[in-house]
Amino acid sequence: MDDSADQIARDFVSRYEAQWSRGAEAVSLLYASDAVLVGFVTAIGRSRICELLHGIIGQGWTSIRIKIVMSDESAA
Image (cartoon, rainbow, N blue to C red; front, side):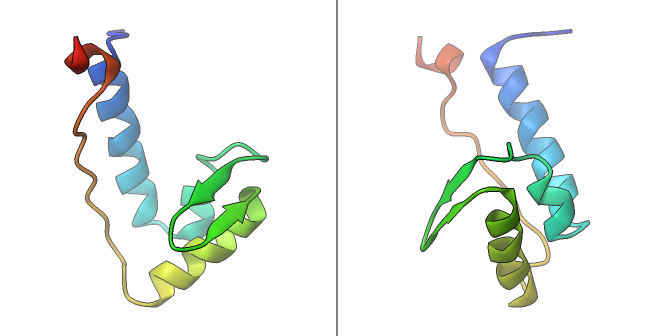
């Protein structure tokens, strides 16, 4: 397994995008139980994150694309 920062970031983004298409519950499982999601509003904890994602997905955001702009390795 390649443990480079870039590969780890690519793998996570791939998982996140795939889970997004499966719904808020699937995405929320990628977060720790005490995670904090900061955006337009802040959601603390997996259940609150799930609620926030339900709202976002419910507004029509049924797919997501994430662009990695920098990882530790690419900063060197």
